[in-house]
Amino acid sequence: MKLKLSSASARATIALLMVLLAGVIFNADGAFFKLSTHRDTFRQSSVFGILACGMTVVILSGGIDLAVGSVLALVSVCFSMMSIWWGWPPVLAALLCLFIGALCGAVSGTLIARFRIQPFIATLAMMAFARGLAKMVSGGMKVSTAVKNADGSYRYLDVPGFFRLIDSRTLGGNLAVVTIVLAVCLALTWAMMERHRLGRELYAIGGNEEAARLAGVPVTGAKIAAYLYSGLLAAVAGICQAAQEQQGDPEAGAGYELTAIAIVVIGGTSLSGGRGAVLLTLLGVFTIGYMEKILSMNAVPEAGRLMLTGIIVVSAVLAQRRRQGRA
Image (tube, rainbow, N blue to C red):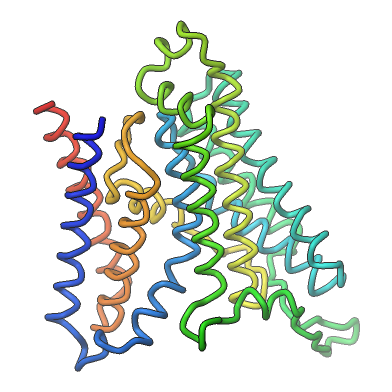
């Protein structure tokens, strides 16, 4: 296992170095060498990184979670309604939104673990359901500080202080609070997967589910826990997204699940489960984050960025297959 992980980390590190080299070459008239560029890259990739932490846990267990982007949107809308429109205390609103995200994940996990529905189908259904629910509770509109009155005029509410806190920076404006949230999520995920019994159980399930079952691993409960954790972190990402945009958008998070999967795969975690580590996911976060930033600085259209991401994911999966074939 150590040999395989070292090989995966080497590949992930090489991918990151190649992206950084591209930034040095295509530096957009020196913009890549500015501190603000790297600071903004960390901030912009933090929400994706939070989603990728949860996705790593699910993929290591041999599953997939396509619903994280929609759960992010649902929580973003709910948190904005509770905080901006209804004026609820931020702690109460955050706890309830975390429960909503965890519930969505637990439902997906139950469908997969107890009812034996394929992860792709179960989470695809949750993706559609959560997105539809986000649009229903928001009326299909963005939940912002601009509130329409009965006579058609608008009144403007204050941005909650909790929103400003999450969207703020520390260390002289060089470290975004949302990046600190990502670091906490990474630490918690690492501790769970490397130091807790649940992590060992999920690795065993991803490696060989039937063997894990015969060895006495509580497969059903562990798989539900994996999806619950993914939904919980999707809720954390939704709260951060709402705070950064200062609104809840029912269309937010579209395609985020694909970016999260790309981050995990580029980090070296096997899509077949059982092999990988959350620290490798961090390398994937940096790789995708810098790639997006470099392409953006050089005015590459979004269509081109999406196509390149797809090519990179396929290349990473093919590299994994070659490595497994030699093992």
